[in-house]
Length: 157
Image 1: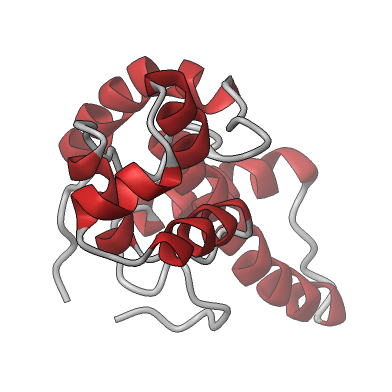
Image 2: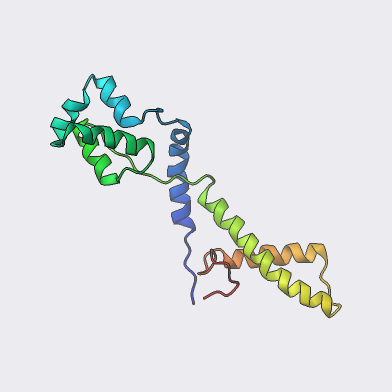
């Protein structure tokens, strides 16, 4: 099956993530964003409830569920509207996507070649360390955009 070059898409996303990564270092207020913003605006939970068309107790539940990380995105968006805020939802990788794919392809190639190397040692046809490193690098390059890169199996489609 043909491979698809996903490198341009990864690089484009990596550029965007570079700009967003500093935001991941900013901790959420310990009482949560909803309560922090509501209080900074001088808005009571009763006032927020009225703006949302919900009962007063719902606001406390929303604030608690945000702190527990169980709040629904749809609920957060509704609260954001009532607070005149925008919800920004993004997953920011811990490393670059390019690095993640490269590391995974090297792991996959190393595991795949380890099986071959084991059989070669049994047949007394051991490959040198330098040759093995070159083989891993070559195989890793071939695996980068292949299906199955992220599966545990060594079979590729």
